Length: 169
Image (tube, rainbow, N blue to C red; front, side, top):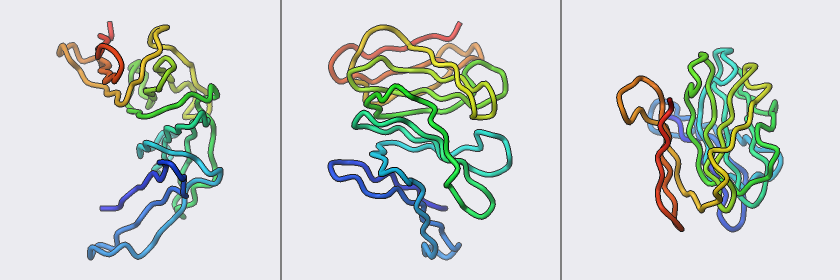
Protein backbone atom coordinates (compact mmCIF):
# COMPACT_ATOMS: atom_id res chain seq x y z
CA UNK A 1 0.00 0.00 0.00
CA UNK A 2 1.24 3.45 -0.94
CA UNK A 3 0.61 6.52 1.23
CA UNK A 4 -0.52 9.99 0.07
CA UNK A 5 0.20 12.80 2.54
CA UNK A 6 -1.43 16.26 2.53
CA UNK A 7 0.92 18.56 4.42
CA UNK A 8 -1.15 21.62 5.29
CA UNK A 9 -1.59 22.75 8.88
CA UNK A 10 -0.05 26.00 10.06
CA UNK A 11 3.16 25.84 8.00
CA UNK A 12 2.40 24.23 4.62
CA UNK A 13 4.96 21.81 3.28
CA UNK A 14 5.03 19.93 -0.03
CA UNK A 15 2.46 17.19 -0.43
CA UNK A 16 4.02 13.78 -1.04
CA UNK A 17 3.32 10.25 -2.19
CA UNK A 18 5.30 7.48 -0.50
CA UNK A 19 5.49 4.43 -2.76
CA UNK A 20 5.76 1.08 -0.99
CA UNK A 21 8.24 -1.34 -2.55
CA UNK A 22 6.13 -4.33 -1.42
CA UNK A 23 8.34 -5.03 1.60
CA UNK A 24 6.93 -2.36 3.90
CA UNK A 25 9.58 0.16 2.88
CA UNK A 26 8.83 3.44 1.16
CA UNK A 27 11.73 3.57 -1.27
CA UNK A 28 10.35 6.24 -3.61
CA UNK A 29 8.93 9.64 -2.63
CA UNK A 30 7.24 11.94 -5.14
CA UNK A 31 6.11 15.54 -4.51
CA UNK A 32 2.82 16.40 -6.17
CA UNK A 33 2.19 20.07 -5.50
CA UNK A 34 4.08 22.76 -7.28
CA UNK A 35 2.25 25.82 -5.95
CA UNK A 36 2.79 25.55 -2.16
CA UNK A 37 -0.72 24.21 -1.76
CA UNK A 38 -2.20 24.35 1.73
CA UNK A 39 -3.80 20.93 1.28
CA UNK A 40 -6.08 19.63 4.03
CA UNK A 41 -7.57 16.65 2.14
CA UNK A 42 -6.63 14.63 -0.93
CA UNK A 43 -8.42 11.83 -2.79
CA UNK A 44 -6.95 9.44 -5.36
CA UNK A 45 -8.90 8.53 -8.52
CA UNK A 46 -8.62 8.16 -12.28
CA UNK A 47 -10.70 11.27 -12.98
CA UNK A 48 -9.88 11.47 -16.72
CA UNK A 49 -10.23 7.68 -17.29
CA UNK A 50 -6.79 7.27 -18.87
CA UNK A 51 -5.79 4.35 -16.62
CA UNK A 52 -3.53 6.45 -14.37
CA UNK A 53 -4.43 7.65 -10.89
CA UNK A 54 -4.72 11.38 -10.31
CA UNK A 55 -5.03 13.45 -7.13
CA UNK A 56 -7.91 15.74 -6.19
CA UNK A 57 -7.04 18.35 -3.56
CA UNK A 58 -9.05 20.38 -1.07
CA UNK A 59 -6.99 23.42 -0.04
CA UNK A 60 -7.58 25.71 2.90
CA UNK A 61 -6.35 29.28 3.43
CA UNK A 62 -8.47 30.62 0.54
CA UNK A 63 -6.41 28.72 -2.05
CA UNK A 64 -7.83 27.30 -5.26
CA UNK A 65 -8.55 23.57 -5.42
CA UNK A 66 -6.59 21.51 -7.94
CA UNK A 67 -6.58 18.18 -9.73
CA UNK A 68 -3.14 16.73 -10.42
CA UNK A 69 -3.30 14.24 -13.30
CA UNK A 70 -0.84 11.40 -12.93
CA UNK A 71 0.83 9.42 -15.68
CA UNK A 72 2.63 6.08 -15.92
CA UNK A 73 5.92 7.78 -14.99
CA UNK A 74 4.40 9.11 -11.74
CA UNK A 75 4.61 12.69 -13.01
CA UNK A 76 1.94 14.91 -11.42
CA UNK A 77 2.93 18.22 -13.03
CA UNK A 78 -0.18 18.42 -15.28
CA UNK A 79 -2.94 20.05 -13.23
CA UNK A 80 -6.16 22.01 -13.53
CA UNK A 81 -8.12 24.19 -11.14
CA UNK A 82 -11.59 22.76 -10.58
CA UNK A 83 -12.63 25.38 -8.00
CA UNK A 84 -11.78 29.00 -8.83
CA UNK A 85 -13.66 30.44 -5.85
CA UNK A 86 -10.71 30.36 -3.40
CA UNK A 87 -12.91 28.97 -0.65
CA UNK A 88 -11.51 27.64 2.60
CA UNK A 89 -12.01 23.95 1.83
CA UNK A 90 -11.64 21.27 4.49
CA UNK A 91 -12.87 17.97 3.07
CA UNK A 92 -13.91 16.33 -0.16
CA UNK A 93 -15.47 13.16 -1.48
CA UNK A 94 -15.59 11.71 -4.98
CA UNK A 95 -18.10 9.61 -6.87
CA UNK A 96 -20.51 9.75 -9.81
CA UNK A 97 -23.15 12.04 -8.28
CA UNK A 98 -25.20 12.68 -11.44
CA UNK A 99 -25.04 9.13 -12.85
CA UNK A 100 -23.28 10.01 -16.13
CA UNK A 101 -20.30 7.70 -15.57
CA UNK A 102 -17.81 10.46 -14.63
CA UNK A 103 -16.28 11.10 -11.22
CA UNK A 104 -17.72 14.25 -9.62
CA UNK A 105 -16.37 16.21 -6.63
CA UNK A 106 -18.12 17.20 -3.40
CA UNK A 107 -16.31 19.86 -1.31
CA UNK A 108 -16.83 20.95 2.31
CA UNK A 109 -15.96 24.58 3.02
CA UNK A 110 -15.44 26.66 6.14
CA UNK A 111 -17.48 29.87 6.17
CA UNK A 112 -18.70 29.44 2.57
CA UNK A 113 -21.35 27.21 1.01
CA UNK A 114 -20.42 23.59 0.34
CA UNK A 115 -20.08 22.80 -3.35
CA UNK A 116 -20.68 20.07 -5.91
CA UNK A 117 -18.54 20.00 -9.05
CA UNK A 118 -20.03 17.89 -11.84
CA UNK A 119 -17.42 16.50 -14.23
CA UNK A 120 -18.32 17.49 -17.80
CA UNK A 121 -15.22 16.57 -19.83
CA UNK A 122 -12.88 14.04 -18.14
CA UNK A 123 -11.76 16.57 -15.54
CA UNK A 124 -11.20 19.47 -17.96
CA UNK A 125 -14.55 21.23 -17.42
CA UNK A 126 -16.83 21.46 -14.38
CA UNK A 127 -20.36 22.57 -13.55
CA UNK A 128 -20.35 24.26 -10.14
CA UNK A 129 -23.39 23.89 -7.84
CA UNK A 130 -23.79 25.36 -4.37
CA UNK A 131 -25.56 23.00 -1.94
CA UNK A 132 -27.40 25.92 -0.35
CA UNK A 133 -26.82 29.60 0.42
CA UNK A 134 -25.95 28.85 4.03
CA UNK A 135 -22.30 29.23 5.07
CA UNK A 136 -21.34 26.86 7.88
CA UNK A 137 -18.06 25.45 9.15
CA UNK A 138 -18.17 22.01 7.56
CA UNK A 139 -15.34 19.74 8.66
CA UNK A 140 -16.35 16.63 6.76
CA UNK A 141 -18.63 15.75 3.88
CA UNK A 142 -19.52 12.27 2.62
CA UNK A 143 -21.43 10.67 -0.22
CA UNK A 144 -23.60 7.64 0.65
CA UNK A 145 -26.90 6.10 -0.40
CA UNK A 146 -28.95 6.82 2.74
CA UNK A 147 -32.36 5.64 1.48
CA UNK A 148 -31.42 2.65 -0.73
CA UNK A 149 -32.61 4.28 -3.97
CA UNK A 150 -29.25 3.71 -5.73
CA UNK A 151 -28.51 7.47 -5.77
CA UNK A 152 -25.76 9.11 -3.76
CA UNK A 153 -26.88 11.40 -0.96
CA UNK A 154 -24.77 13.97 0.93
CA UNK A 155 -23.97 14.05 4.65
CA UNK A 156 -22.39 17.16 6.22
CA UNK A 157 -20.63 17.40 9.58
CA UNK A 158 -20.79 21.03 10.75
CA UNK A 159 -19.11 22.50 13.83
CA UNK A 160 -21.19 25.65 14.21
CA UNK A 161 -24.68 24.50 13.37
CA UNK A 162 -26.89 21.59 12.64
CA UNK A 163 -25.51 18.63 10.69
CA UNK A 164 -27.32 18.12 7.38
CA UNK A 165 -28.07 15.41 4.92
CA UNK A 166 -29.31 16.03 1.37
CA UNK A 167 -31.24 13.36 -0.49
CA UNK A 168 -30.49 13.05 -4.21
CA UNK A 169 -33.89 12.91 -5.91
